[in-house]
Image 1 (tube, rainbow, N blue to C red):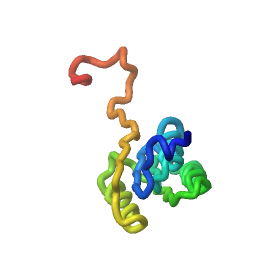
Image 2 (cartoon, rainbow, N blue to C red; image 1 turned 45 degrees about the vertical axis):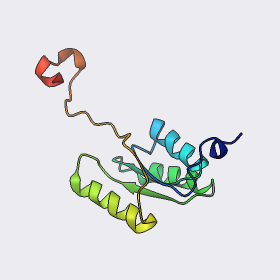
Image 3 (cartoon, helix red, strand yellow; image 1 turned 90 degrees about the vertical axis):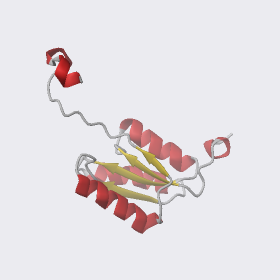
Image 4 (cartoon, rainbow, N blue to C red; image 1 turned 90 degrees about the horizontal axis):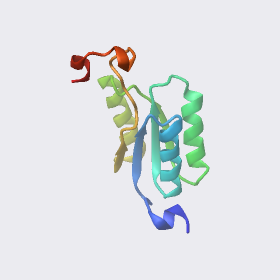
Length: 116
């Protein structure tokens, strides 16, 4: 049984942040296999990696966009939404996979306030 028959996302539009590698890439490809059109986004300014994931989704017969965006920057998130709406007309699924850590130190060195 194919993933599309098991869990069809046919006709849905999915936006996946942190989509250039790892879990985000796997989600993008699985959603594509399930029938969704996919927008992959990443703060990584290496468009070839992001575009490669979009191309892999396209190779499944789905539409895909690669949109670099840092989810910690409002203007970039607004641009991601705009490009998605311009390309697909709507957003049905949002996967907030992008990781963000505002504290740049080892966990062992953090005090209780930093973890609050």
